[in-house]
Length: 205
Image (cartoon, rainbow, N blue to C red; front, side, top):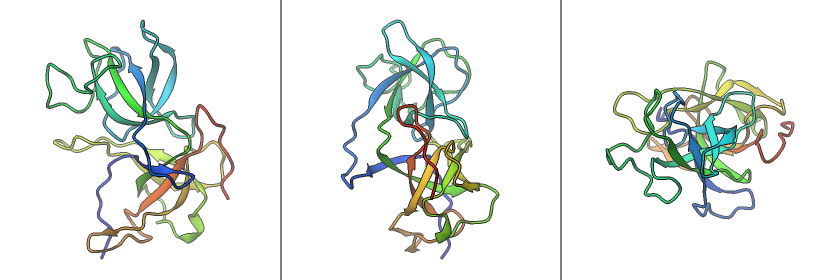
């Protein structure tokens, strides 16, 4: 059976040393003037500035550039949680457009975290020869009513280029749509952040 087309952005699952992801995060600031929407699973990058309390600023990451990590929670309370908007607890995301207040996001920012993500893009579907190659992120907005990231990685960019966002580490070993996740459209992959603000990118193998 075909792999399910259900992107959820980039999800932390474990560390490079094999340990389970502990849920540890750091808090970052999204300026009120930022016009991007932010969903759980979206990739982010540093802005080079911070807020009045000293929280570092972030914005949405871009392809072929350094990134910081991925969003795991978001809200308006500065650094202490809960990660919701107290004026609208139904929102687990930061809407697009400039906002009246800054938002704060819990970011999985350790460069040793392994993430899960769905293959996307207009390139040929990836095969075993793509394992340990590098790829870039592929931006997308979730459909109406979906409240998690729609980002995937771009199978049209697979190469050894050291500036690409991620390195592929193999397929997720799990059943999907009644069959084992397999090479092909919408495959779920494990990958690490390659071009990272805290660790220089490496050439894919």
